[in-house]
Image (cartoon, rainbow, N blue to C red):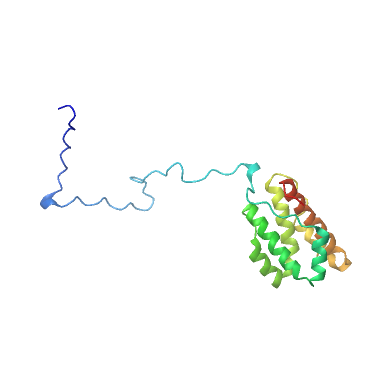
Length: 174
């Protein structure tokens, strides 16, 4: 008889006329009694400082080729450039305006793009705890720098160069 299981425990009484007991009352605002504890796996731990920007690495773009394409396409390449650069930075860091917003801004209020682009490139460095080689102030090379004609070129060389250096520091080829 040792291979038999013990009998199941008697069931609880279900109340008068065989109905189940009523459910407990709903908790009130701020009432923590009876609340289930949050499981330990509910939130991911924050990424260590060195791990920020663990997304895909962006593309290194030749400053000379990009400038030439801008001239040859009568500025259309500029829209593509701003879309791709901002989309890559957003994919990589999880922060920033992204490609679609950058394209809309480039089309309708393009004067803000040099400031935003330089600020986001500088932000990539800042999140890694490094000195920012460019910032939103670098956009001043574009405007009012355009009145000395070479201002936008200086802005592009500085900003694109800083972005290329960032991607290369993460292993991008180019």
